[in-house]
Length: 421
Ligand code: HEM
Image 1 (cartoon, rainbow, N blue to C red):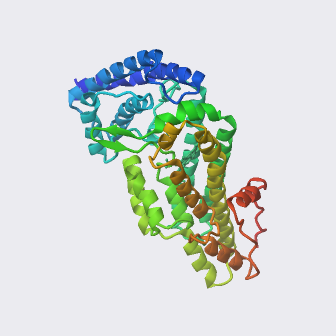
Image 2: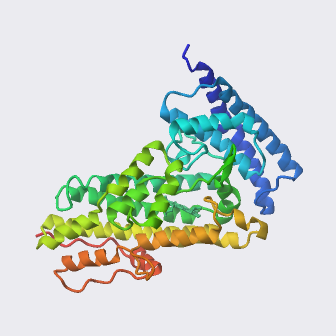
Image 3: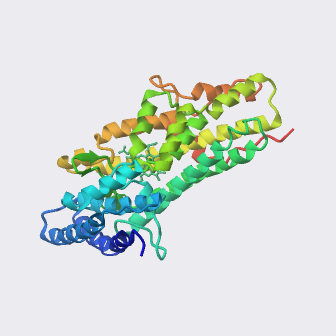
C-alpha cells in the first residue's frame, strides 16, 4: 500500500464532494439570493439550513485530509488540493458563514508553505489547474453564467499565455531575424484572441448573474489569523511578460513593481519564477529602436517592426475593452446600486472600488500607450518606431484616448502589410 494511501482516499472523498453536493448546495443558495436580488442572506432560515450542511460536510472532509498529516509528494497534486480547500473556504466566505479553523487551517498553511503561495484558492485553480472529470471542471455552482465566465475568462488567459510564449522566443533570435516573424505573427493572433474571447464574454454573460452569483466567490478571506486578498483574473504571469517584452510597462516603474509583487503569493510557483525574471528583461521595443536607428531596415526588420506595433495595438485594445466593456458594466455600474453597507465589499483585492478602478485605468493607459501628463508611457518610443519606418516622414497619429483606440482598432480589419521587397 502506498505511503500516502490514507491521504489519497481522503482527498478523493473531498474531490467527489466538491464536484457534487458542494456545487448543488451553492446553486440552491444562489437561486434563493437571486430571487430577491440579495448579495447574501445568512440569517434567512432556508439559507441557514443549506449553509449548515455546507459548513459541516465540507469541514468534516477537509478535517479527514488534515488528520492524515500527509501531503501529496507531487507539487501539482498539492496545488490542486489547496484549490479544493480554498473552494470550500471561498464558499463559506461568500455565504458569510464561518468554517471551523480547527478543520482546515493547519492543512491550508502546510500546503501553502510547501508551495510558497497564499493558503487560499487562486484564479489558477480555475483556469490552469482545474482537472475536468467526465467533461466537468471544478466550479462553485452549476449555473450557466459561471460556466460562461470561467470558459471565456480561461480562454482569454490561455491566449495571453500563448502570446507571452511567442514573445519570449524572440529575444534569443533578435528582432531583425526573419525567424522571429513567425513568433511575432503568433503573438499578434493570440492577442487578437484575447479581445475576441472578451467580446464573447461580454455578449453572453448576464450582468446581474455575474454581480449577484459569481463575483462574490472571489472575495478576500481569512485563514488562521491573516486575511488573504481575493482571486483576481489577472493573477498569472503571462500578462506581465507581454507588458514588459512589448515595452509598454517597465519593471522599474514603482507602480508597476507594486502590480507584479502584489500577485506573487497568488500565482503558481512556476509563474513566480517567470515574474522574478522580468526585472532583468530588455523590451523588444528597445531592441527594435536600436536596430532601426542603425540605418535602412531589412525587409525582415521592417516586417517585425510592423508586427510589434500591431501586437502593442492589440494589447492596448484588449485592455481598453476589459475596462470599458467588462469592469464598468459588470462591476462598477451594478455596484453603484448596491446597498450602502455593501459598498466596502465590492473588490477582490480589498481596497475600495474607486481605488481599484483608478489603478486599472492607470494600467490600461500604460498598455494603450496613452498620452497622459502624469504618466510616462511608451508613446514616444512607438512614435519613434513609426517615424523610423516611415523614412522620417511624420508619424501617423497613435490613438489619443482609450475610446479612440477602441474605435480605431475594433472597427478596422487587421492592417495590410507592405508588399515585400
Ligand atoms: C465580467 C468580466 C470581468 C470583470 C468584471 C473584471 C473585473 C476586474 C477587476 C475589478 C479587476 C481588479 C481586481 C482587483 O484588484 O480587485 C480585474 C483585474 C484583471 N482582470 Fe478582469 N474582469 C473581467 C474579466 C476578465 C477577463 C476575461 C480577463 C482576461 C484574461 C481579465 C483580466 C484581468 C487582468 C489581467 C487583471 C489584473 C490587472 C491587469 O493586469 O490589468 N479580466 N478585473
